[in-house]
Picture (cartoon, rainbow, N blue to C red):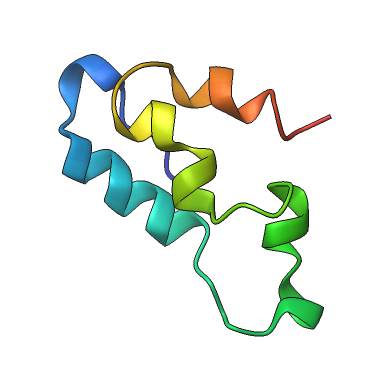
Amino acid sequence: MMAAPEINSSSEEDRRKYIKKMYPCIADCDMCGLCTVFHGKDPELAYDDYILGKRSFEEVNKEFVV
């Protein structure tokens, strides 16, 4: 697994691509479970603060990983 791009050295598009690559929707909710992990949110919405450069990947991740 590749590390999440750092906010200070990546673009918004780089971060969006990373989230899409790491958490792809496979359109089979019964088999995937990503929406459950992200409390019913699309991963792009769940990581919006990271994508926009407001919070680090790790900060956002703490909301979902217990």
